Image (cartoon, rainbow over all chains, first blue to last red; front, side, top):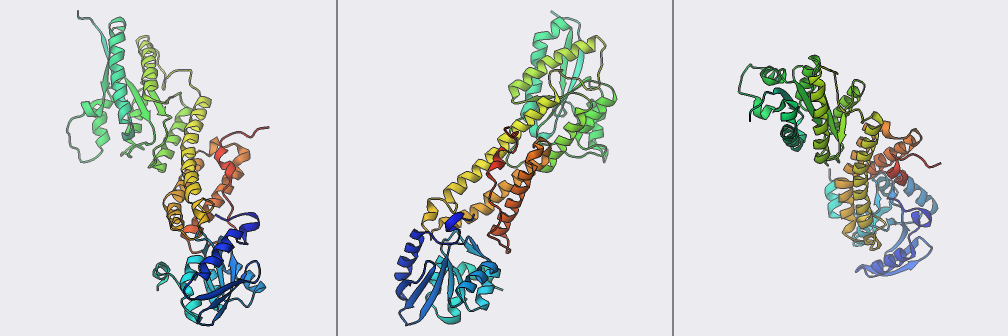
Length: 133
Length: 304
């Protein structure tokens, strides 16, 4: 069920605050900096730096991934903030093909435990079950 | 004190979903006898397969056996329908329909009644559609009664039987006869009322779940929550089946929807198709049309 108006795309201020607090508290994260309204720098304790685009799109498909990457080509991950949101397979394939991770918030927390390919291809246990082939 | 009387056999015909009504009809006939038999010199005998059939084997056509055993000899038929038309027989769409055809063929009185009660959650849409088709067909051949509850059914039958018995005694005959006060317009209003009750109950259930578990609920303010999984489960198990049921009910009663609101039905169909795909399919789209809130009043005429 999409959200209309201003917050259809941009996360609500309280969602951004929640994101910063949650990621800052992650055991593998050193610090989080907000660079722009939807752009965040995540510095990990191992020294790796991630650029993350935060969105509130209800569903992220290939179309949304292409749109976001055309505006922020250097990002490492797209996170759609609410657990009520979702991504489609086309969206995930599009993101991975460009070396970018596509997550909802809970999955992103899991992915932060890894780097490189294991980071942007991370799936939660239930998703691994769903997508195994 | 004994008295001379003519005995008319009243066949009680119905599919299996109106068992209570069958009892009510039987009791009403006995009550009619208590009130009228002595004065009218008429006794009405309820005839039902439960009490009047006996074991017999022919290898086929069970309804044919019942026709021979007691259906054909009846003088009046009282038929009742709600959501089912019944199981097809060798010669007709159902046992009840064959019994009606049998007595219509003999130019005997047929008294038909249709229930306005709310539809059960597990209603068989195909059976319901057949009842509607049968009702429409017979609307062009006679008048039938409708009832909201068993008290009303009993009251209607009591007075209709009195008229029918007097007509029989006076030698008057009509192919299908029942009280003149009921009209097709009244029936359309009754159907609309029953449909409104049914779809509103489904819309209300969906709204409750949306408000309690949906993406704009209080639960969703906690961005990471198991409630999101409950929402997704409810979408698949309740909302989507309810949407399908509403769509089927509205489509089966499209004649009740004002012409200017048919595009609203299309918008609703577009929404439920997209909503289903987003929750159950692999092809998703955030541009799926939102739930058209006006659909809740789709049966109402537009205010000028």
